[in-house]
Amino acid sequence: MATGRTHRPATRSRGIPEATVARLPLYLRALTALSERSVPTVSSEELATAAGVNSAKLRKDFSYLGSYGTRGVGYDVEYLVYQISRELGLTQDWPVVIVGIGNLGAALANYGGFASRGFRVAALIDADPAMAGKPVAGLPVRHTDELESIITDNGVSIGVIATPAGAAQQVCDRLVAAGVTSILNFAPTVLSVPEGVDVRKVDLSIELQILAFHEQRKAGEETTSAQEPAAAAQPRSGAAVRTPAGGRAAGKGPDGDVPAVMPA
Figure 1 (cartoon, rainbow, N blue to C red):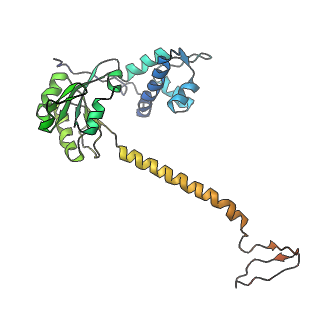
Figure 2 (tube, helix red, strand yellow):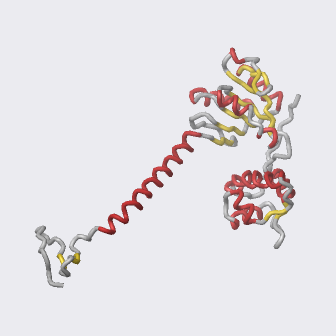
Figure 3 (cartoon, one colour):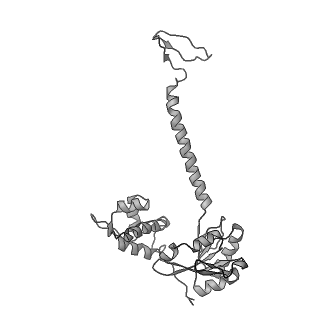
């Protein structure tokens, strides 16, 4: 039974900006893919492209880790994987509880990326008594009545909330009161937490709405582009237009009259 509390990596005390911390998992994902292909070194340009950032930003981010690479050689892939994993706290075991085992919660429980990134799902918790004892992803679902004891017994500091919006805040309050200090929230609501508790919100509907905005803008740009050639072919108001006879037709005057032909 694990009763000791785990400790967070000292990223903030070392002065690493939050924006850099947010990009470290992107670098780690790209580096892990290179490592799996037995690629020994990678240039900043190649890694930046794989991570979706520019190379200057990547070099700046890595400078906070004390890693500068070697000119003409690049970065050592395995060493960077270790550096970033250590900085993110992934070189130790992080027990996690998932609360709310509906479709989303069950999908998260079955996600293989937790174990491969240093996160161990310690328990699956749901408020429905009918779910108690049912196996999901190899673990029996436990009732919310056991939440506090589960967190204490497993030394849990990270909780995942996948409940309906109406239950999320109450679950959050119980998690925090039991000692959880980091929460990943999938519920479509904003959680209120005390100082010292970190919340990361994942809202798929918001992400889709942002994509819809960009799609609408792209469609508008395409419409504008299609209209521009036609607009360019139209005479400007007040401009003269050549006639087949070699004369020059004047644009409409202020009274709307259009002289038939003016001398060229």
